[in-house]
Image 1 (cartoon, helix red, strand yellow):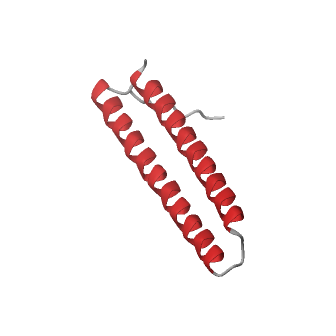
Image 2 (cartoon, rainbow, N blue to C red):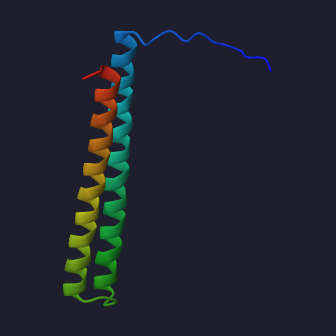
Length: 91
């Protein structure tokens, strides 16, 4: 068989910084998306409570759970972004 070799030069420090910046931007986009999902869920829960489909206690528990899930998702996004930035910048 034939082998095709493509030389790929190592990333320059400047390119690594650019990519780390892109990682930060992508992470912020994802954090915003998670917060938007939280907002939509909270609005639905409040409407359900207003329409008497769930009790105020159930609404409070659900809002707390939505916040817990939001915090966990944002923490995971932060962890992954930090790990990737460290990988790119060689720290």
